[in-house]
Length: 154
Length: 419
Image (cartoon, rainbow over all chains, first blue to last red; front, side, top):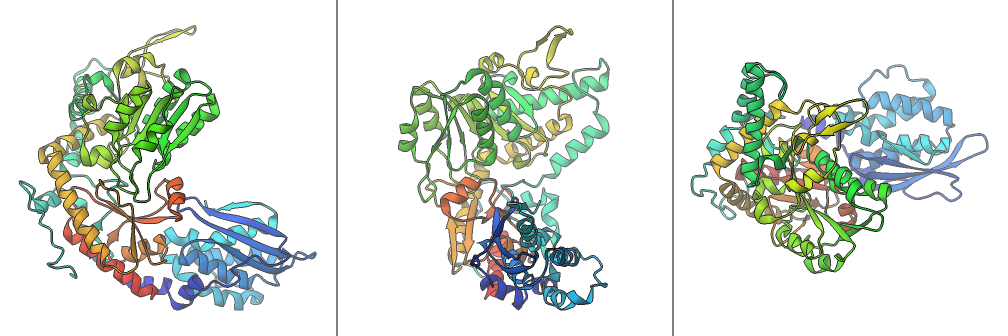
């Protein structure tokens, strides 16, 4: 149990949790959405600057949440920059499978580096109650680029 | 063990043998992640003593049939059990009559019953309902639904920073438009014991009815509804060491019988034709359909158990645990207790540095400590204190100093992880 815990709360996550990257609204952001976890009251807002060709030119976020949800949103906002909406959907699909402990052995090569970075979050699979924390930012990101205002982890 | 002697507060009160009480609760001997379970979430739901589990098991095996229906022996026995449970509850609350005891699913359904049946028939647009800033969502949302349906106004009685209910400010909210006051007996987040007797007295001056949410209160203080003189008092079985799936609404009998049914169905009618139905008096009027039969038996067993230990003895023990825990936690650097009311029960909500409560809860779970993390179904109160969530340790009749030491050590471990 304590090994699982140390894997979940490893340095990289604690660092992103304490010093989140992209923790602001980017200038010229043209899409945003709130992510709410109604179970715990955590709220994140994701901001996106989406280019004409559906490429995410910039991304940021703010809000309050646990170390897991903040670290996940922090890493996500780094990784999605330069990606298309469709690519973000695929990335989230793989990330979600990683968090729930499903098979992710067949990652398309173009996403391998990103998934390697996200692997630090994979410890969450030992804590089913916390999977929603890890995916909250991603749900909100998808809502933002689709033009929805609110995403819920439920 | 970190706090060995300095904070030791004796719990050897008369006839209170904590070890033997703990032995009565099978769940307390569980192991959790390689550690003894320190169950500090009784405010969400309490563990059950063997006497409750065995009584329910026995009733399912030997005394089970539907109630109020058959003319056969087993059904008569089940009906007797169910109605005897009503008597046990009535005696426990000192109700004037067993007819004043309505079995519901939980407190939420009890409050919704009043909001619908009383609220929609006796209140009108412009009437005012007063609640407090520290209500559970179950005592907020039903009144908002009523507001949207009939146009009542909702007034919020304030609290101070320590979490004390402000009686003077409450009194200022009362006036000729005040028709109902719905207030919690004890805050599920802050532990504040609300001066409900004084609230009832003030509300009576303006002829307002009073509903008390006794979810936490009856567990730690008990209640005498005749002395209190409120109009409704609701509590739930599962926080009182009984089963989930059963709650109680006590109401004054003339008021209950003036209220129309909330749910329609079997058991609550006198005569049904396709043109018209007539309804029985309380409590049957408000118990449509097959009720929680064995849950009622379990609730009565829980009340018998509590009564055998003594409500006052339990309260004294829990006060000792509150004092002990408050002093233990005060020694942890960066720990801030939210809720320091003059009178409170064994509930401690807190923040620890800037570690999110969910992270705390996950980490101390690895040390066998079970606490609640979140908004505790009291989001307006979280807003009041400017926090999205808190960690909450809540105590019961079986909480020991060992549980609290384990909590304190686990919190230090969590601090270590976050550096």
